[in-house]
Image (cartoon, rainbow, N blue to C red):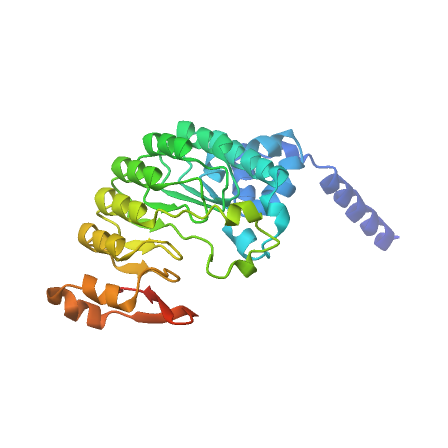
Length: 303
């Protein structure tokens, strides 16, 4: 009898626990719980539990960073990433976070967004410091001008594989964001595009920017405090490399992998005699890509 009574008490206690209204947790307690969840768990689970949890997920302290790089890096590039539908979903997510952050959004790492969501970022995220928006075919110079004006605290910018972004964007970002010290402006491998064929639309692959020296000139003139620069598969020449070496004298890391128009001789000509010792101590990477009768060099300068 005692055993049955004890079991009955435990069952009653369990029922009360199961019937507890989790929605009545204090807001502070909810934030504490939700902050321990991954971004995916919050968006796919907690956001849909109930109204109180939905509101808690929109708290600014949970929306100061939007980082989707892990999810893109852990998955193979898929053709659907380049569709309008996928872009719309990324835009909706980025736009929501920009609004929910109440101005406290400091880091954005996404891909396949467009001007539509970035317009909200420009208007609502004055404290943004990191903007990484790789592979965005519908991000244009126009919206980058708005970003430059609305987000002057940017320190790190990655506009790799964004072919509608030109040297004009680099110039205006550099002139409005004095704290910028990292720039990644990599292009897709146009020397051997087979790795992108069937995934990236052919018309986009064929739209690879040709004005490498114009971009180098903008970087040299408007981004003098750069420490880290990536220009993989850029079409800049020795002229552009010379401009960068003269205008960005604080550089600690330079990646020119796949820059077919820059040779080892060009690289050596850029190194001034008084800087030779520094370059001797630097870590040099040998060509990552080789073509018949021509070498394509990668250079890293690490103090």
